[in-house]
Length: 266
Length: 274
View 1: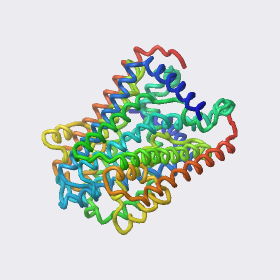
View 2: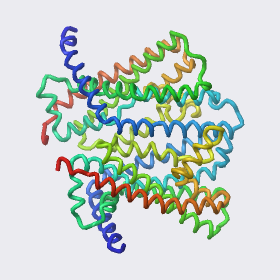
View 3: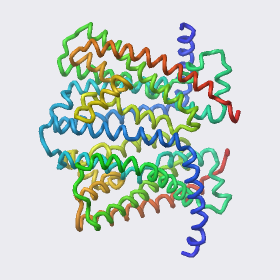
View 4: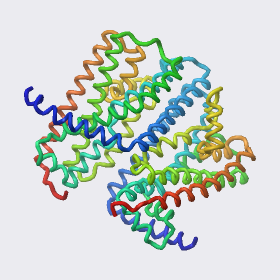
């Protein structure tokens, strides 16, 4: 474990040095991310001028949800997304051989080998949005909730990583993935809104399916719920268990995908 | 005119080859199509929750049903107007020198890309027609009565013009590659702004005045907002005629802009790399 942390540190330093070689580009990329958050906040401010709550979430609580989503999305993009996006090309071109020959865990190398520093500031920006929302709602400091939030946030990150790894592994069977960026953006729409929006005769079962069978809707909803809404011990326990199961299953599927890899074109 | 007719079979052949290429990756295409419905469904549910929370039936001039129908119709608009990868592809060809393949062959790059993109759009629309038809059928209660022939004609014309505006706007952006080595950041910025100002996120009518008027004066509304409003019957009579004439004018502007940028860009092009 210590070896992999050292390796991650070295890769992070190398990535930062490379990004800083093109400072203008890095600043522009960071500005784009800021623009996205600004558009998102304008959207929700416009919405909350017309309503006092959305699916039971008041404006300040919803702001916390948005901050949580922004920080989580930033972590996924910083550490995993660009790496996973390149996997389809590695498979198609046969360049995956060069990664498989290295004496390092393949999953680590495929999913964590470079760090996208342009999205890293978003983690702090998302955290700042969460702090502002807590300040606006006069949130009483509660170390238990804070500890549970951190634990559930990490579980959410584990779930998101597991789903991303499953989508990445599909590249081996599908030969060519459309841009994983796009597929991930589409899939992560299940995480973007509170799961309470799935209300109604037809969609309630769909919401249940995406909470307890394919638990994508728990990624943001559970940590945000734990912090600003009622605590639900069963859902917290289920999220922790689901994270472990998904991480194990996604690793097995990834290894199965590697066994199907035929090293074509190399 | 005769030169166009002579060249047409060549570009039809490119269209056919591109269509075949697109359909080779069926499973990949199918996965993308299924996932494409998720944001549609979640956005609709979000707006249902917004109307539910507001306890009002009308927000920003849109009744609840109209809003849901609008969100679905915006997807149809984007089917025609979105051009993923077009600008980046042009800028990359300029940067790595592979643009010279168009210069060495009797092929016009822009005409080639129109044929190529048209084929991809055809494949996409053909393969998603059934799932979209099912989605629209499930949400049929939200739609107003089917539009009359004139409105429907206006709608189809607005969609075809949306394709032209979307294509030539993106192509013009890609031509920036002649002047700047790296345009990725510029494309991201434009994409992010476009998502909001074209009305994909929410209709400009929700934005307070005078900003809503500013948004409606820009050409970007033709990429998503305008065709949806035509189908919903919110743009009628002379407003529809004026809207379509303005859309034709914007399409012509972007066609001319892309052509000019290409011509000026080629003067700077040094074909290094590739």
